[in-house]
Length: 225
Image (cartoon, rainbow, N blue to C red; front, side, top):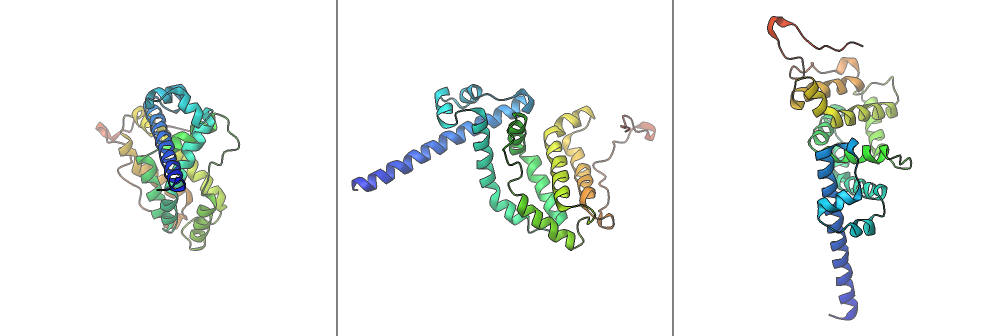
């Protein structure tokens, strides 16, 4: 192999090593967020210790916490692109159910986005696939599958705000209600459907998300607003 070929091999090896380091750091950060929660914050020294790499390596790759969070979110966005494109071809109800299931099974990206926004990064694009989703929502409004008395941007923003909020707080809220998150998921998903579907198209309320039966048929702890 000539010098030019060897140089190419070495560059590719360096890129793979750099990507491996970034992935290790990202996974370490996600473990910390899973363990300590978003509001506990995240600092790069903790990430380095969790990933078992030198602290200098973290700062070499990212410089500061915002850069690290941006990189992790951008990597997640790239990984999800093919999934998003396939999902947006589904009709409204199936699309939401698919997104709900994937977000609840892996809320890591929502946690990273939340942490970056709490950090005050105003230049961050929190909706990287907004245009794709807007087209899908407009298509479904025209097909009568979504409510037509609100703008598609309002539908997208309100729905994602509720979905992301549930992804962040489902375990805490469920524990406070004496339930498990799985017991409430179906009911919360039905609520989200009702936020954006025309009234005539709403499905039957989910029984699994209702209040647990109690002796005498009374329901305790109902919230009033």
